[in-house]
Length: 97
Image (tube, rainbow, N blue to C red; front, side):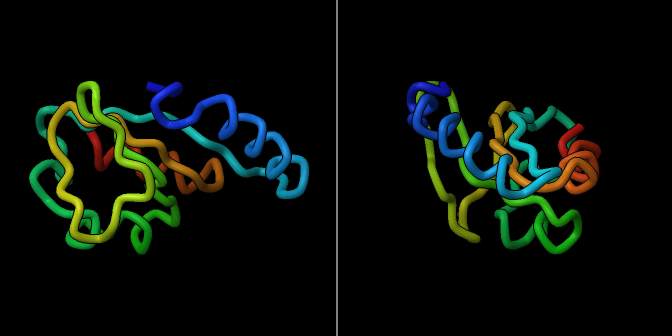
């Protein structure tokens, strides 16, 4: 999936960003079967306002959705690309279990 999202370009860009902003992380997290966000839009789930993390892309099967908007509905099995501080991304993880 990283190739679908332009992984090598994203990786190079992230390396540059991390050099500029200490503590920034990019993680791939899966939406679990009982996740509170499954079946809800990004706007409804309030991921950013509750955690401080940004969902910068979503992988669903063989499809990639870069920069999903607030109306994008998350589904069980989605793989989220989350960007934020270590604390923000850690706060997101329980919402996806």
